[in-house]
Image (cartoon, rainbow, N blue to C red; front, side):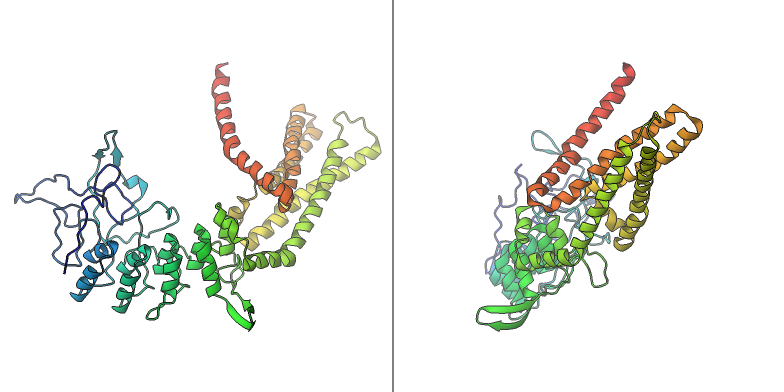
Length: 477
């Protein structure tokens, strides 16, 4: 039987250097830098270092690029070599060894204009002795050469159905998890292979399970929603339904809310839910997922049963608050020359505004934090900057009360100026809260989101630079 023939140019990067098949570090070269010899005159090379000087003694030993011969055979779709290796006792559950997502501070290689590398440290040792927890929060699925760690995951990621079936027949388990907690189905969602996904979940020998969670708590359903795999998301959604009755081509089905809705069985917020990922998604695929009968029905039910009442209540309270705030500002007369009736109405309006601010910050804010949790509340507040501005405006109005008292007792004009400045900042911030309620309309919602994206992006950057320039050069002038 023929051995695997690897082309010399198959594993070269853009600089013409060999790279690792399954490594995030695309600049690993296939030779080892000279290392100091020991007292016996032999090279003191680490047996796990990367280099062509390492020759595996058996089929399970680490090869020069981090994979076993079985991984290489699967990578090149060589079914004959796969059968030969399995026949001679290769472990079909042998995992790839190495750190495939090294952190950026550990990557000390720098590129020169000629394309050569300047190494500032030794090669990374590729071994499986590290017990550091591995996280995918900062990983991107589009740029990393990540095909899993098991040979079966390799076969699934490349869509090699024949090799996949052969490994399954010889004991390979599609539900085994790698260092990131990903199974074969997670890998197929990342690689967006719907045909292989359907083959894996309906395999006659060993079916792949869809309810296994990875290290980030994501199932295949929630992972597909998070990274925008619309076709696979719909496939996972249909797999979870239970058919109640059917008449011809009409059927009634129920869908479990676990993994779809934002609320868990215990009443907590599930930030890994499909609905949260779809709503916060930035791609067109996330937008297309909203045009689904199940998601649309879920959103309509949540709006009609809960959100609509709270939305209308908050809008009415805001209108009342702004009425009293406008009355207090318009009837205010620093010279104290207004009539007694206007003074009474002005003081009543000021008291009502103060009560509204205290209620908003203490009662309503405490209630939201209690129901959602502090971290969840902060995370949710990032999506609504106008709500944050409104809370800051209420805080400014409360802070203006001590300066009003100091001004009335001491008759010091400086305290009056400070009070006027705080109120002047609070009034536009309070009216800005109306934009939060304008998001529900198709005509204004997109423009409001776009405006806040501009404010928090380019305008905020310009504002920081402007303040730095004014502060620095203002002292010179």
